[in-house]
Length: 120
Image (cartoon, rainbow, N blue to C red; front, side, top):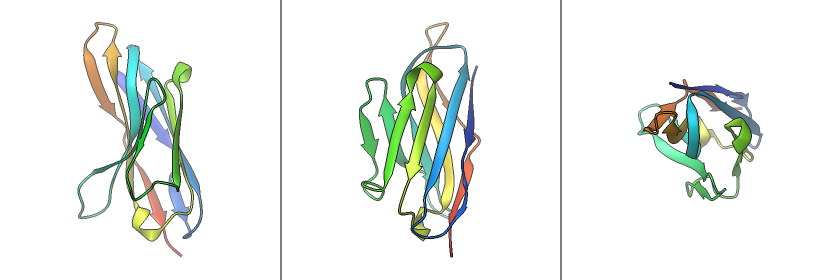
């Protein structure tokens, strides 16, 4: 069983910044990638950013140049630095991790979600 604990969401004015954190724990043998999805009310969940075990990153076009994903592999932790936030970034943000556990089975686990609200 792999657990994820997220933190860092909240209310921020347009143009402001927030930093989300996500720490994974449990029976983790290796991690392939970690990242963040978000879901706004009435919309489908979308990938925001991801980072692989060899530090390759991937971003949604809507956040390129504003958001930065980084990770601490040894700590199974991933961060999302969000700058120049816009009202359309308002959503619940969900962390995920993919990898293999001690039984060599692949897994994909999700965090509980943290809400980001961008409003004046």
